[in-house]
Length: 251
Length: 323
Image (spheres, rainbow over the protein chains, first blue to last red):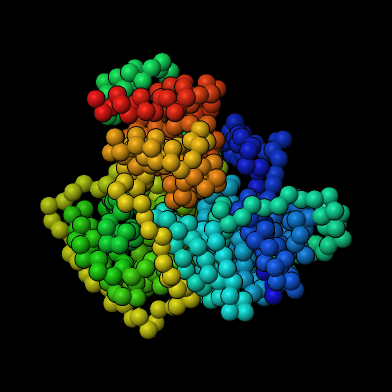
């Protein structure tokens, strides 16, 4: 069995994002990068399936510049078997990325795709669902519980929806997008890092995939959100209730 | 000429208020462009919810009422929305930014080869096209952007768009024919965990009381956070820390990856204020923070801050409010 796990390079979640003064882009100076946390959860789940079943090929794939090899190596160090980098310009929009993953999917022919529900940089939460549509296969999004059955042809998924956990079954192959509570990704070990150096990391271009994609989204500018004006400290519960009643008039 | 299709959302036949915000977005675009919007509701036994959509100026309320659509499964719903969007020559398909829309609409967009923008907070006309604003990076960046293509998919933040004005005329209801034999069946519904009854949803409530790391167990959460919410007739929410430690269910989580709320009053109890949490509540009108750490970042966004132990302050606050 083969599981495909896309990994996106994103700013470390604890980084405070600053913009260039002209609002043309994020100021990347000195920013640390990491695997998108939801993608790390997807990879962890693939590795756990591999550990419980054996005989599974876990392939990590990233789309972007040379710098993405850093996250692919980290994925290999976690335990993925093979890595694939699709060299492409950055700033592709979700539909463009999904179309590229269609080509990757057709090349790799995985049994299913496990990927993060959203990337913590653009927060779009679209690519997995679009990929499922373009491939004409099923999807389970925001998955916090996953069980494979029927000789790995069915996945039973607990989905985190606004109304609580919903359970669905989907036929494989399918796209499964992961939510926070699915697992806690392992830390990379030193032996893992050593082993990762010997694992294959293949680089191909968009042209090699035979796809021609354009981004329809054009970003005109970025700005910080409006700042909330500084509030006041109150000393007592009585003072708080008085302010809420008579000043803010919210109770 | 914009022709907007709003996708309504309901909870077992009870209309979600966020739908009215998505219609408010459509109303705003139509007012600017002199065009019209339709609203589509899907489900089974949804006539009451459909009826409640009629007084807001939609050109028609389209009703896809069929047993096969009882549960909101992405494969079936996308198929129906795809058909309706084509038949009505829609130029925009819009839903509220909820897990419902986030699951279904990107799938439908790809079926129609349309681009999509999530979490839209503003729209304005630009010639025959539009300029949108959306939030990204956990709410720390607002992007201004355009989306090429004759058909655009959007999810909109409900706090950003007021419901459309009520109209005297009721929109006509138009049934949508559903051919169940043609619907895909890759996804099968099994069940949903029982909801905690009695309290409103945090995305729809006027008041949200939210608990964080300072709350030690589920009993204390119910007593302090639930208790204070009940005194104020509000909803409960939670920081990620409490969900991760199993004290609260995931559906309560407020933040970048949980629910985005914007009530009139948000009381953050023992929440330090990680950027991921603040991404989910900083559009609230009035924020109150109660925390024993005077340096907690939550105080930077709070309108009223009270430094103190939540185990003392919250019971005192409940007593005071009950008086």
